[in-house]
Image 1 (cartoon, one colour):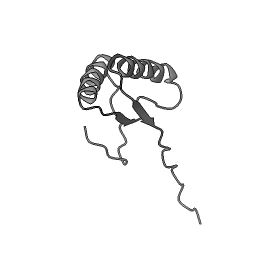
Image 2 (cartoon, rainbow, N blue to C red):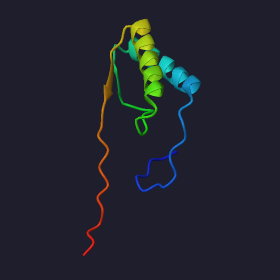
Image 3 (spheres, rainbow, N blue to C red):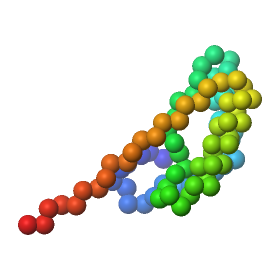
Length: 87
């Protein structure tokens, strides 16, 4: 699914089992190459899904320690929506 900031329909939820499979493959590959993983914070919606991020963070720590790699998570602030001027 491609990203379009003008979408009115929210993106689909992240499947934790699929995410875990991807993380395990990426961590294994990074360990073989003596590399690290860099990614944006994912799974965070309007603040009510804090438990979802906690689950993702635990998976990141699990595979980082299992394969002895570094994982860097970047926090990007979403641009605020500006209201058009009402003259």
